[in-house]
Length: 245
Ligand SMILES: Nc1ncnc2c1ncn2[C@@H]1O[C@H](COP(=O)(O)OP(=O)(O)OP(=O)(O)O)[C@@H](O)[C@H]1O
Ligand SMILES: [Mg+2]
Image (cartoon, rainbow, N blue to C red):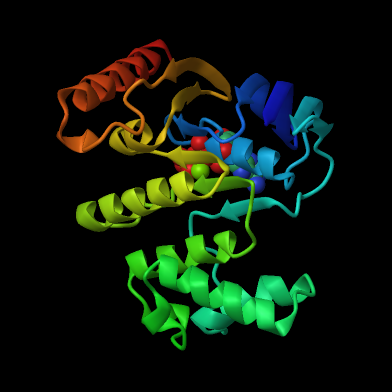
């Protein structure tokens, strides 16, 4: 699905990503974790086609990424909701701009709100919602476009521990029910292990290690010892990196 070959991304003269390569298979999940400023968001934006690479190549489904793909959903760190539109209209708006018929908009917005358990908030404005509710609306807004690739930046970082786990459960559920590839950025080791089939550890604009996660999708994962062993393995890689740099 995603084939990143030796890309550099620069902000002016500062190099944010240096010679980075990454493969993500279709219908799999990939967590990106690493210290603040290591280039996680930059990588996500490059995959979204928002930031241009200064060298190297990004292919998605075999073709070179040269613009923002209509089938890529992007969920930003600050939810990216339109404050002047109701929840319903936040979801309907991207469909309207794509000339989807009124009947289909009604169906798709209604069913997506139901799946995310936020139907009752459809007439509210984003400012009237809690963090967890806003995050659900942000996820709904991406899903309503039926993406084959979903990119998420720190989807649960602003949430308390319980809500964080609820959102993680919801994301896993959505991933299982819809065929899609999921690439997400997180600061949270447990989230990386819970949601990431592959865990990519970044440092200073490069990938320092890619870890295959055999625990992914195991039943009741958070209650299993393998889960915590995997978390320790990821922590060790992060700590070793921290000592190196
Ligand atoms: N718009 C910008 N202009 C100039 N430099 C930038 C810009 N955005 C990011 N950078 C720099 O690029 C590097 C990578 O930033 P990036 O936002 O990708 O990091 P991050 O891993 O997402 O960090 P965080 O975990 O804090 O969100 C940092 O050194 C940052 O200062
Ligand atoms: Mg970031």
